[in-house]
Image (cartoon, rainbow, N blue to C red):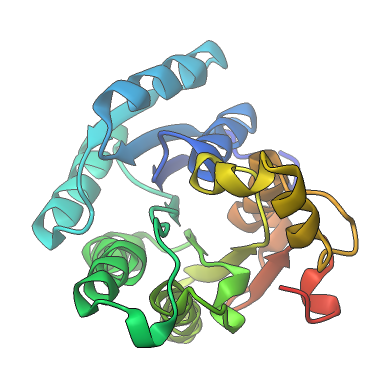
Length: 255
């Protein structure tokens, strides 16, 4: 079994219906893992499940709104029941559908993005903790963002992702004695449906990429391959780390 081989592993991926979550789920299947797919969209999950099964792996479809803590707990229990156990947990659900100056921010918007980006990851981690700590040898990957370092006009999203990073480091320290590793993946500018308005507009895309040394948008697959690394033996002595996949943006302060 190679360092990047996930054969026999059981993974749950949230926000798996599209974008980075879908790419991670498919990369795990390619590496040999069975995958429980969690998202609000049952129809889209069914399509991803077909892709996973076409790769010869088992897929479990679990529709759930992770902003509801009871639903998050139910999704974790369903994933364990469907797959038998979990070796890998990916908290990818999240996003932001608005930008505004902080002074103009509606507090309901703050609450919404905190629930979606931070509370959902917390609820999944809290629900899965007894299972992972009892079994040991598991990997948790929390998808944060370069926005965790600060992002003008995205205050609630940035604060939530910074919280994800802090949660990651805290759980890494608490869970390490049980052999459970917890790391964060921080994507930079990635071409997904969430920011289609930026990467499809030539002027907006050029302005965005001016702070990215590689001068291109990341793809969901660019984020998925590091997620395979974080899930397997290749990163077995790595925990509490924050891996930036951003085309060099943070190297020059361009994120």
